Length: 523
Image 1: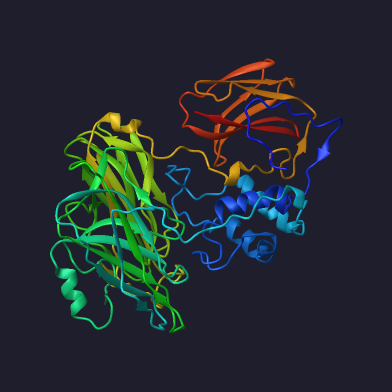
Image 2: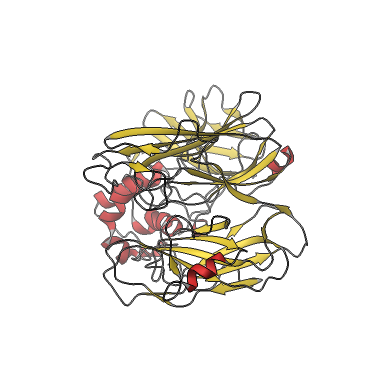
């Protein structure tokens, strides 16, 4: 039976104390897996194997535990504790612990009466009625011991400038498409490159081989369609071609075929605030402060890029980019008053997992703001991704074994009012509003006390009633991050929450080993 999500929850646990039980699939783990994992890990999905159901998840249980313990899965390189991004794919520590406890406890199925319906996935488009849809010619992916970066020109009929408000990449072969970069080219140069090479498309690493081409979108496994914030759009130039660069991993098969599609939603308005996407922080002077970008063998070097914002702008997304020996990338902004705004931190850079990350709300940068980017490159044998053994000199370039340092920003002239635009709340949308592991925590005991939390929903203040004096009250967000902590000195306490992001939270009350939890929603 599915437990309901509520704010006013009298919780009675009977007499005495109950030991925490081993999590079960139906009561705990299915909710986590169906929310975070099966959007990729289903038949035909990008995850290459399915976790849709107890039998399949049980078969892959040890791999699930190993991948989640080190936070390799779900793939989400940015550190959520540095800045929480829109549409994050991140497990809370509680979810990770529950998966481990389930596996260590023998992966019990639980009571089928409590089973959630197994999610189903269609091959339909998220942008069901695109204004422009373009699909590449069928491409037979050749057998190769190295990765294949192939560019395809997708001509579209767009005689006038328009504004993109939605962009969706639909991989034709989710088992083989690792990531896709989407550009527009109004010079015709990409068509020439395509004509000069046999077969569909042409090979190009890094970009599409057209310096003036503009990046307008990207896709990695788990990505959804990208939508611009209200009132903003990406200008699609008249008579431009769409050009996609598709990354196909090495394969021993010679029968794999791909035909990736791009869907665009265009604004009916003739003009919108234009969102530009440019590598504002980059690897050349005068932006690069300590160049040139050269990494000698057996050395670790950190490079710093800086840019001073000349006019007021609003930034909506950021996309770091580097190659193989880069090991970390971080960016932040320093306002004229001296305040620091964290933008993105990728402490373990992996070329195989890079994306375009939107902010939960647009960020306004006044004139004089300094935007900084740092990237560290480890050109030693301790770097498992170093392609050279022994290490060789690495310099700036387009090849796989060269390096880059770019931070793409989506930006537009703006005002502080743009920060009121909501792109994504901080709450996780759990599959069918399912819940898990709230009555008993892993390794904890549950007291027979009563908790009440109100109002429903909350906006400025939460009231918490708990008849255990001296208990510790904690408020954590959906990612398990502590937002409030206090000791109870009264039966009813007021907890200010007006400054917190809207979304799902958990009120925890602890007294010794006793713990009670209540889900709350802030709106």
